[in-house]
Length: 460
Image (cartoon, rainbow, N blue to C red):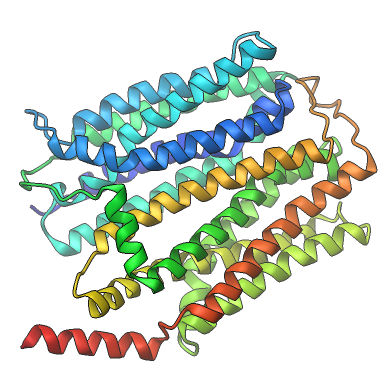
């Protein structure tokens, strides 16, 4: 079951489409409903948190449904295609809200967003789970995973960088109309991408699938203290990053402001995306030649905290409108985050070996399922804190007035926004640093010792 270049390309195209959809929802739902439609940010944050935690809890159940599916078209592709079509409809509905207000709008948003999360899970779990059914060749599986993750990053970057400018061009002065039209375009691209993926990718019978229940995930975590520390670090690091991604649009619109705020926001997100990739693919391998993974991890946490502190300092020194300084500080944060993303995956893998040494059980599938669960939980926590924070600082939404007319915020609101975007992420990263330094023991030397011990056991 060797893969052709066309099959790899089709699988990658599927990743681009599905992560465009995810990035649009994850990054802009709060802004759309709070700033443009006028809902309370605390309410929006609460619904987003509930939906994302529910979505995280729902992942194992979706895995079980997929495992029990058997059709003439395979086990995964029917779910992938049906989930895509349903999710595309709900995505458009999410960003094309009817002319409602008050309770009616709150009910509409709650129902549609929860439906969006459920239908996304319908297609996302089969997409990643189908790799072993596409090819049995280990090198092809690894390559397909790399293709999928890389193309997913491309899809996310396209949305992060291009949405605000595209909405401005499509809306003709109305961000609300612009979001509806842009969501329709993204939905169509999404469906086309997944149709290409399902038509070109072929499944093979892999027999019985192993699935993990939520109790299994937590039991495996509690038995493995090093996995627990890694998962807690993932939670805190991702919560810090999601806080930044949710608040940065408000920072550029209301703090820096000006007629060119969309261009400045687009530039900042583009620089951030580039340096996050450079952190993963260039900076980490360079540092790895001389330093151990735990040393690099501590340095990356320190660099991210420094970047946030410098952003705050630049703002309070009156240089917030200097895009060179802001982008340099942002580049430091995002490059460090790219390194941290790589290292948490490495540490999670090492914790699997540690768990086998400690308990005699090797539970990589269960431990890595926990990573997905925690990332979604971190996203929910961050967006809830964002919602509460925006209400506490008294930020006044624009309520879809013309894009050139930006609501004026008080000096206290601007100061609160700066502190939310920088100090809260720093606190999360400090907590991650303290937990890691005090509890994490899997140095490079320790990892090698564990691997040697396990290899000796297996040879007996």
